[in-house]
Image 1: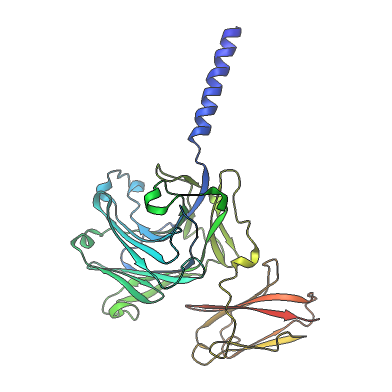
Image 2: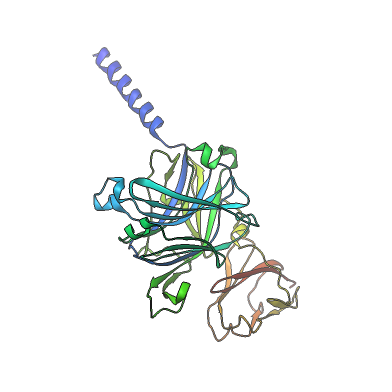
Length: 357
């Protein structure tokens, strides 16, 4: 009897050891559409994650394994990949049959990880074009483009690859780290009837401000793969203060634990070239003057306290057209610093105001 118990204990310990060894050392996140999209212009405004050994991304991929097709002959993927070990580069990649990579590493005049930028690619039957902040950086019309004929899912993720020669050495002391996503747009491919993009080949289909988790459009992934040291968990895809935050953490913790104020986008100081805010500091109210060149593009205004809680939110186009008047009267708010965010379809202005009660 004792031998049987001892044997059972040994088998149990071996199982536990194998289970623990099989666990990934880190937790990442992936956000993906439920539906597929064939052709179109795909856009995102994101702030990528910095750190050697880390990749944050925006891409489309044919979900061929969900269709029961395991052969990489069916692989089709279009990528923006932010390699955290570079402070002046961004990678684009097109993956065709049998995992054939067509990569390009683009040198930038800025650090992509320190602020938000708009990344877009156009996928048509004859070409794929990549843009950063509306500037064309790559055009690809190779023969393999014609093999991209099936719909693809839109995805964003953060992960830790095993390939040091690609992404650099990883130091887990930088954890947790985050990639921030402001919005995602999709334009359908409508040649001849479109009004946007290259040769007006595209028409707006949908925009997601990522203000909440829309489970009719998106899924949070729970998978991983051999060359990924991170297991995707749903808790690491966080919606907070109008942003999607993809988190890379150790394998014990999860979720966003950063300063709520760091969610507020790259802080722009209002000037005569964009917004004018007065008075600041203020007593009962302050006014935001919207310049004529953007007053028809304003889509919303939000004001946050130091904990990242939204105090005021306005999305009325009439109220937002020329001037925004914000009153603190009868709000029972404390004196101090508050953060404002004025968003257009392509840019957000962020700034501080000081309330003196």
